[in-house]
Length: 494
Image 1 (cartoon, rainbow, N blue to C red):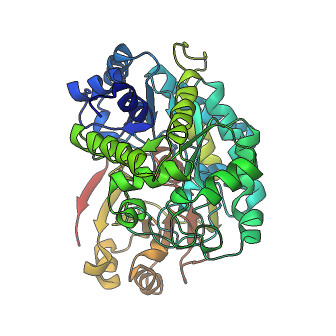
Image 2 (cartoon, rainbow, N blue to C red):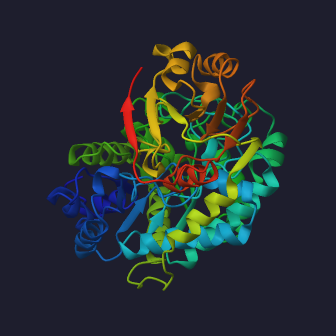
């Protein structure tokens, strides 16, 4: 490899790395100068917006056409607003509103914010059709469960982002919405005929391609009818025959993070996963969040070894690097498109998305009970709940396994209870807790996750926000009439 610097640069041109901290370390900048395609930014890289702009400027100083990517979906998945929650609702809320013009404007505003800080590729929108209520990784990241509706909003989101001067990356091909396991942790299986995929999962990707999406992200899911025992990320039948051949996609194919168990555990490590993804037709290899110089060198060495032992053909790597360079060229050296971020759009859309079943009478000075819920790796540690929006209202936080209906009733006294959760139907014991409480006490349930088919028995009302972003939670507080007054007390009890 040392005797062929051109080969090293070629291989680096297919890699999307990452680094930790608010400023790119020297190795991250040096690799960009040596040909690394770019870096993905995560929450650890974001302290303030001016600081992010400085970081991306440092990367561009090493090479002007460096790719700077980020997962800024709006809603629950946010990097720029990871400390407070996103001012935009996510896709599920936008799908419920079903105003494609609003979806386009919200995503154009997201894109404008990204362009202002030097991000060139948004690893969004999520265009999976969420057909599994228990889906642990998509849920409110999806525009909904209807393929036609998801397709319409997918096209609008792509158009909005790219109008702001940021390339869109539709994900996760060929569709992660029917899974009930998280590909961060294992390899999910979608065992349906190809005809079902064409009717249910693929229309939004076709719409995104037609709308001009410059990139599409692969899914670490197994679809036996197409991929056999391997994930779609390693399947030429999925990436080349289906996406490029059948749907005519000519842009850059980006892998989901290769550090995820759905890829690395199957291939035997990130390096072997990179080789398999390239051989299958991927162009830009997202290594993940836990990246350092040693991992990049390990992956480069494995790809070079693959070129030597026949696992890879050099023309395939050249094709991949060329497409990655084409994605970079789409935004390199261009000033922001002139779009202006508008958080009011997000808050207004979130308010339109709130749905109330039942009645909200008699909620004067309630006790707000927030049910603890874990986050997926895609979401990360982003604050959620009604707390920041409450005034003159007491809130407590509980863990279901350590809480009883009688304990909550005693704590509330004569006050009604507003029980707030995220994907309550998936938390062990939560549905029983709500039912027992509602049988003896006035209860309103606020669902900030995917509402699915479950409804609480005996509750006065069921309020669905279709997301837990800052905008979604403010909208819920407004609908419940909890934003009046001057003070708020908050405490944790179990």
